[in-house]
Image (cartoon, one colour):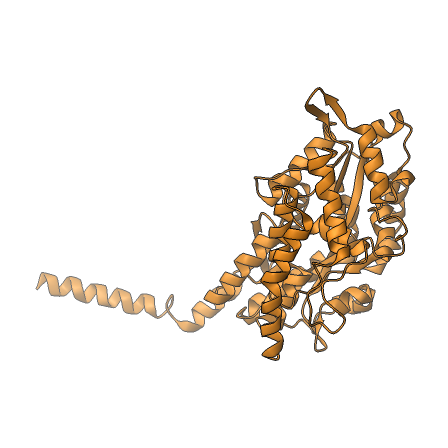
Length: 436
C-alpha cells in the first residue's frame, strides 16, 4: 500500500507540473523570451579576427532578440570546405562569410539562399554596383558584399631611403628584380636579407600571368589556356628568381596562415626588403616602417590588368530556419552598415564596398594620415574580377599543385603548367559535353 501511495503522489505531481511547465503554450512563450542564436562562420586570423570579435561583442551587447555566435576558421578556404560538409549533413550555420568564387560555386549548386529582401535602411544602391552584380545568379542576389581584396607590394622604407630607391621605380616585375638584386644581402653562402618575398600558392603567380596577358580559358570557353606562353613566361620568371638567383623567397611547409605571418614577420624584422601580399595585411604592419605600392606589371604591358580584385560576401545557406534567418539578416545589416564598413576598411586596409564609406570625413582623415591606404583603392581600376572555375575548383587545384612544383620543387613552369592542363582539360570537356 505504501508503494501505491508513493506512485499516486508522483503521478499527481507530474500532472500538476504538466499543467504548467509542460504546457505547449507555456513552452512557446518561454522560448520566445530567449535570444535566437545566429551562428556566424568566417575565416580570419590576426588583427582582422580580433576586430571581428569586437563587432560580435558590440552587436550582442546591444541586442535583445539575437545572439551572434562566431565560429572562426583559419582561412576562407577552410570555411568553404567546412560549409560544404555542413550542407551535406543539413546542419549549417545561420550566416557565413565567403570568397566570391566559393559563393558562386555553392549558389550555382542551389545550396545558398537568395537575399533579395536585404535592403539596409533603403540604401541598397549605396553598395558599389559591380560588386552587387558579381553576387547575382539569374537576377537573384546571393550575398551581401562586406569587403574587397587585392594584392599589393610592401617595402621597407629605411632600405629604400638608404639606397635612394623610390616606389615609382617598381612599376614592372623586371624593375622589382633589379631592385631586389641591389637589396639582397649575403654573408658568404648565407642570405641575410632577401630582396623580395611572395606568398606561397598560386595567387601571386596567377596575378603575374594575367598581367602578362594570360587567360584561363579560350574565348569560346572550350580550351584551358594555362599552358600558353603568357603563363609559362610569367611563372618561369618567379622560378628563376627563387632558385637560380636567390633574390625571392617563399615560405612553405606550414599552413596558409603560418606562411602568411612568416612573410609579415620577415618584412617587419628586416629579413626581406619587399613583400607581395594582401592589402588586408596593412592591419598587421607598422605603416611608419612599411610602405605600400601598386602591384607590378611587365615591361611594355602596363595596360594589362595588374591583379585580381576579389570580393568577400555574407550569405545564408539553405536549411536555416525562419527565426535564424531573420537574425542573420539583422547581423548582416549591422556588419555592412555605413559605420561598420568605414571602421572595417580604415582599420584593416581592405577595399570598401559602400560608396558612402569614401564620402565620410573620417575616411579622408584616415587617407591624410595614411596616404598608402589609397594605393589598393587606386589599383582597383587596373584590376580584374576573379575567375569563376567551371570545373568546380579543379583548375585552381591544379594551379596550386603546379605552383608548389615551381616555387618549392624547382620544376620548370612549362612542365608544371602542361601537367596542370593535361589533368584539367578532360574535366572541362566532360562538363561541357554534359551541358552543365
